[in-house]
Image (cartoon, rainbow, N blue to C red):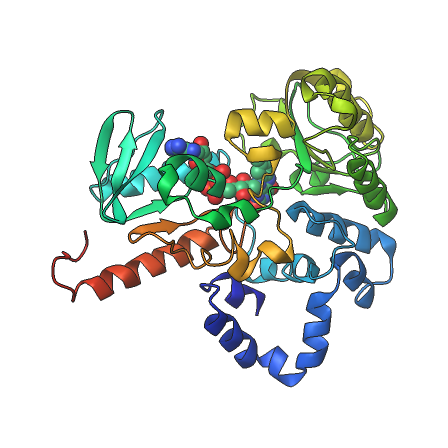
Amino acid sequence: MVKDLFLSVPSPFNLTRKMLFSRGLMRDWKKALTLIMQPYGEVVDRYFREEKVKAPLVWMAAQSGPPPTEPFTAPFLLWHPLYHEGGIARPRGGSGILTQALQRHIEAHGGRVFTGTAVREIVIEQGRVAGIKIDEAVVTARRVVAGTHAVETFERLLPPSHRPSGRKRMRLGNGFGAILRLALDAPVRYHSFPGDDARRALQLICRDRHQLSAAYGDYLRGEPSRDPPIVAMSFSAVDDTLAPPGGEVLWLWAQYFPYTLAGGRSWDDLAGEVAERIVDAFEAYAPGTREKIVGSLFQHPLWLERELGLYRGNVMHLEMSVDQMFGFRPFLGMAEYRTHLKGLFLTGASTHPGGGIMGASGRNAARVVLNDLERRRWWPGERWGS
Ligand SMILES: Cc1cc2nc3c(=O)[nH]c(=O)nc-3n(C[C@H](O)[C@H](O)[C@H](O)COP(=O)(O)OP(=O)(O)OC[C@H]3O[C@@H](n4cnc5c(N)ncnc54)[C@H](O)[C@@H]3O)c2cc1C
């Protein structure tokens, strides 16, 4: 059911239909709905006994942002079985290879891709989209699909008179994750699992759910977590394009880290200290890592905003809480990939089903645009495929 919901336009009709005709729900809908409404930090207790199994599952579910205690978040845990269906894939060279492949595909079909220059404005004429402005040049188009952050689209790219008032309801949150990217001159070695198998896996380092709750407590106080749980990734163990022979790349994703810090402090002053703290937390499991470091980049919430345009350092664009999911993402009335303006469509992490590298929102949005093109084919004044 979760997969079906992800790969659907989140209209009330679609959601009701999917829920009614989902076999699991029809059989025992009261049980299923109660389950979905629960926080993922508790739902795990229904299926597992040992904390060493529960903690990594809950830590994995926490990657979307909301804390383990938040109601209606059980799907963050319950979609994990989907990995058994689709498998886990990773492009050789890293996820940036996906966009390069997409660019080649577009160009092979006669499209043009502009990089290195920002869209300045979405051009509106007589209440409908007429194109986009790149620098001073206008590229005309009858349909524009904005994959930009919803704040960028609604607050900056649309002319002021066309900005919908609902945009003020979007909640950006206060950051939550940060990643320390390390280059090592030797492979990672865990104290308890010194072989190469541990390097090849996604390494979920979380003692128990108390550690996660404590980290979230720090975050609520406006403090970077003092004892952060970590997801360690050493993809050079499975991809020899990432590091020279004998070297290693080690990504340490950690939570929770607020964008706005208590006491008016700035990430510019705190970044070095917090990065050291993350290395300390990792050293407890893989001693000797610090001596192997030959390069580092700390992508903390302020860095993410400055360098990647992720407002308030939220890697999911908008909070992934129930008030901003399904038909409420990015906000009510703008959630089915269409907008208030003819010809303007939305996609990406700001739309259903939110952030993550899965392509679901792009697939859903493409279907909506194709339907629109198909429908307009029969209307005078519209050329099919424009
Ligand atoms: C550090 C980090 C770690 C992550 N880890 C994971 C992970 O392990 N697994 C996972 O599934 N997801 C992960 N994510 C989340 C995932 O990367 C995002 O949810 C996903 O990339 C969102 O894709 P998007 O295309 O919707 O938005 P974005 O990636 O935010 O892309 C929006 C693009 O719009 C561009 N843009 C903005 N304004 C303009 C303009 N005016 N003109 C032209 N272009 C513009 C931006 O430069 C950007 O390239 C991570 C994110 C970060 C930052």
